[in-house]
Amino acid sequence: MTSPAPQIRQASFRENLWGQNEIILEYAGLSFTNEKSVKYKTPLAGYDDGWSAETAENKIRYTNLAAFLFLRRYTFAAMACNNDGVWSNAPLQYSFAVQPAWWLRWWAMTGQLILLAALIYGIQRYRTRQLQARSRELERTVQERTAEIQAQKQNIERLSDIGKEITASLDFDTIFDKLYERVNQFAEATVFGVGLYHADNRQIEYRLAIEKGKRYAPYTRDARDKNQLPVWCIENRQPVFINDVAQEKVLGVITIQSYQKNAYTDYHLNLLQNLAAYTSIALDNADAYRRLNGSLENLKAMQQQLVTQEKLASLGQLTAGIAHEIKNPLNFVNNFAELSVDLAKELREEIEKRRAKSEGRGEKGEGRDDFESIEEILETLIQNAEKINHHGKRADGIVKSMMQHARGSSGQRELADINYLLDEAVNLVYHGLRANDVSFNVTIEKEYDESIGKLNVVPQDVSRVFLNIVNNAAYAAFQKQKANGTAWRAVGAKEQTANFSPTLSVSTKNLGDKIEIRIRDNGNGIPAEIREFL
Image 1: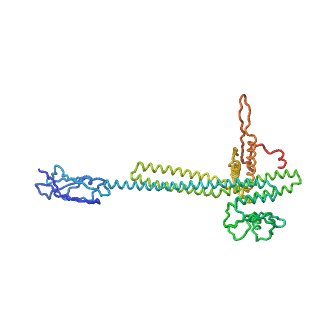
Image 2: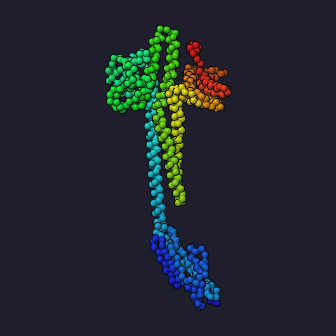
Image 3: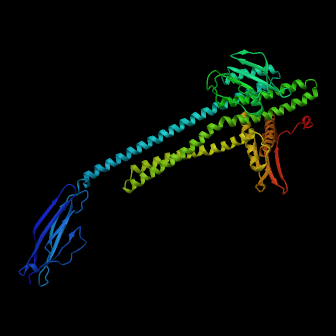
């Protein structure tokens, strides 16, 4: 029997630049029997999975055949079978090529990849510049705040020197003159006055009143007249701060005034409060000197008491001054550090999104290295901001303790952690003494019993007791170190040094129905001539 021989009768192919194509193939199996009874089976290599089922159809149509980057070649094959079931010996094969859409061709894809890479690079450069700009802004802000804090620290040191100068005098007029001279160094005091309150006759005596450098004769105000700001200030024990007045007003018992609006800020008010405290100490010293001048023994005892009072008052004022001066810039540093961490995390999320897109497209090499470099810079910025925030919060805790101590006692009992109050007092004293003398250093040994828990006490009073005792202990140990210096001892044929190390030990212990608090120092102890006055 003769097998049929399939042949292509007609092939029609067309395509365009948009990737649309169509091919129509008409074929026939040449046979000596009836050609209409011939059956066919076909595949299109690269498109069909295998041979098709037998069919008498001798025409086939394919549309939108896929191609990517380059020409794609397809091969059509056909087998024919006659009535006797005899298949053709070899399949008919017809090959043709399909062009991809213009945007899928190699040159178009290359251009798109280049454009995409340029776009990613541009975005990366833009974000990097934004990050660098923010970094520079943060650095500049930190530098500005650091300079501001340093300037305020210098003012605090100057304020301490002024306090010592004012309290060194025992003459009222000398105290007032020094006060006026120093106030003008900090603020414009066109009008300046100091009034002394006499509770016995309800009068405010102005021993000093100066306007534009002209000194007026002393005069008094009746404290029973409630419509006076000095009277309100004395009765309420609060300062009066008015920054925009049309005519002369009294600014507290110690008053400074300017003809310029908005000439003062809270900073000037804080300085004036500190000067008022020093002036109060100086006046107390002068009055005590005048009253005790007749008795030498009483004078010695009072002088020692005044020294102690001045020391405690200086510590309290130093505490208030430091707290008020650094509170605002410290809040700014903390807030800015937290904001920087949040911004850096948002930037990291944006970078992760873009890197995920890049990896999804299979990009490698320089793009990945750029992302890694950016992440390293970003990680460093996050760590720096977190460190700033961490140490800023530590400083904020110290400031809060200082402000609580300076605020004074409310007289109300409440549950408080004794260990926390003692530890805060130790830290506050240490930093306060370091602020006055940079050479100060003392080893602090702590041992707290955590089973004590909270006790019902007046926190401000307890804190003040802790501060006074710890301050005396640390001061005594450091003074012994300054007095002893370095001691030498001979050991055999060699000489060795024995450096005195000032040490402060604090501990708490739960004794059941009571607690024990020990505060020890290795100083010289209380002199014998003073113990009889305690």
